[in-house]
Amino acid sequence: MLEVVLAAGLAALAAAAWAGFLVAMLRASAALEHRLDAQYHARRALDRVVEEVRWAEAVVPDAGCPPAGLCTDRMTLRVPAGNPYRGLEPYDVRFQHNARQQQVERRVAGGTNNLAGAIERFTVAYLDADGHPAADAAAVARVRIALVAARPAAPPLVVETDVLLRNRRPPPSPSPPPARPRPSPRAPGDPLDDRWTPPGAPRPLQPR
Image (cartoon, rainbow, N blue to C red; front, side, top):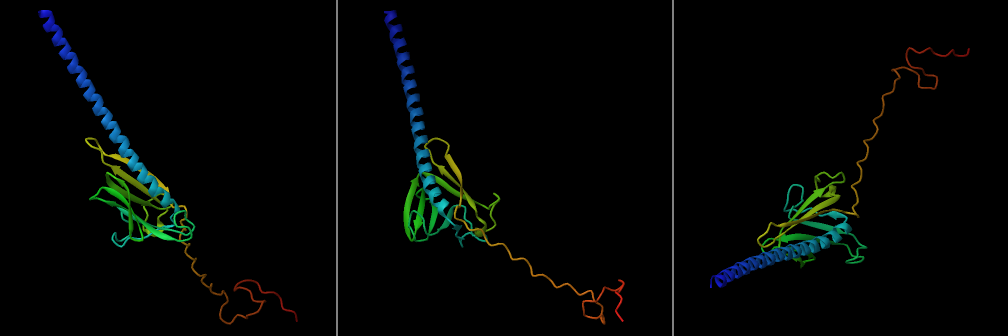
C-alpha cells in the first residue's frame, strides 16, 4: 500500500512539473509571437514611410511647431514629379501618429491610410547635411525615424532608421558682397595720364 501511495505521489509531482514546463513553454512561445508580430508591424510601417521619404525633395514647414516648423510627432514632405506613386504629379504627404488608435497614418490630399497598429510612439528627428540638428525645414537633408511598438506584458520594441532625402535641392549659396571701389592713390593735382607716378617715386625724364 505504501508503495502505491509513493508511486502516486511521484506521478503527481511529475505531472505538476510537466504542467509547469508546458506553461513556461507556452508563455515563452506567446512572448516570441508577440515580439515577432510587433516587429513585423513596426517594420512594415517604417519601410512604407522610408520609401516615400527617399523620393522627397523637401520637408514642408509645419505652422503648429514654431519657430523652426519641425514637429517631432509628424512630418510633411514634398515629393516632386516623376515619382512612382503619382507619376508626373508632385504632391505633399504627411506621416503622423494617432495616439488614440495607436496607429501610424499617411495622409495625402485629405485621404488617410493606416500603415500600422499597436504603435505607441512615432518620432522624427531632422538633420542637416552634416548630421547636426537642422535649424529649419530648408536645412533638412535627412530624417531619423523611430517607431515604438507596444507588446503585451513586455517592454516596447523600438525600430529606428536614418533616411536621406535623395531629391533634395540644397539652398543656393549666398552671393558674394559687391567689390568696394579702392580709393585712387593719386593726390589732388597729380596729372591723370599714363606718365603719373606715385608720390615719392622718381619721375621719368621728359623729352625736351
